[in-house]
Length: 437
Image (cartoon, rainbow, N blue to C red):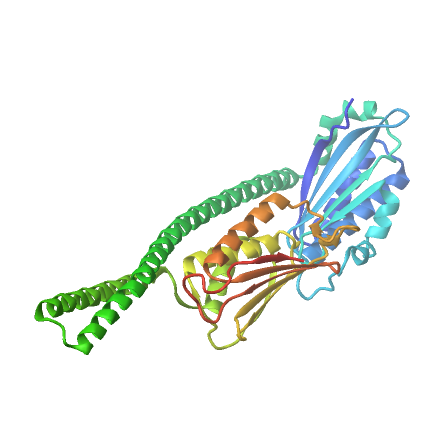
């Protein structure tokens, strides 16, 4: 027989009166399956104290109680308790700073003596807590329990109909939570698809506009010099004088046509200026604020943003729609490296060349010995990350900007973007380099 879990009931933990009820239900269940008195007392006390912690530190929650068969010398009956908190550690409470401090918190040392397995997830850094406990020390065979599961459930609910309602309400809340989570994921997926479509359209428009500008300026440069030479030579001949009237008329005609060519060149320059409609002087701090609002992963993971920016506008030459997408991709890239409740530092400097620096410090970023790269313990898709940075590089190339990625062993990853103070045309400056240290 496989290790199949049989759900018995789920109880909500919303008020102080729920704690003794959780204790009594666990005591009744363990007693009903025939466990020794010592096990009954230990499991009941451990369960009620964990429920108290969930209520007082994490705003309440629920506990799912199940039985399961476990193969040892014979098929034994085990009990499983799964606690989930409603919220991160409540403000005003002394919250554990790391996993070691959390495990030292009551009642976890006692739980580890009562249960074979105690797994704790979250509970620190603004993350909701999940506690998974299993015990196979009941000393009861699964054969004796399995046939009585229905009767045990009836016995648990015999005292009041409220237990039925609370159990159903807990299951209903669980289903609603799953539906909301799925809806939110679909919304985020739709939003990502829309942003990618907008990015594709903006890049195509950007390429088209830049091609027209570069072609116009290239033609103007190729025509300007010959026209200037022709016009200049014609005027020098006219200034010398002494030409026959017929030749003088011809040279005047040449000089006039050279002037017309010069006017055409000027029209090319005007057209090039008119086609630069996508690029304008923009406030980098305002663009960054728009990108922060448009990155839902920051809100979903409860990332704390620490923004240090000048009070005066930091002006750059940019296509604000496309550059905003690049900033969003940088934020997403770094957000994947952070766990819930951690911090992202952003510094904007208005120096000789405007600079924005993103710095992610996370316990989830770990250094792998023998490797100069930074990796995330949450198994982030590295291909997707590099693809995201490739899009950023392409956009920054159009903005004549440089991107630098820094990785350190102390759990830190930073990205710096430096913009030119003066935006130059016709490739007069180097653009869009990505350096990886």
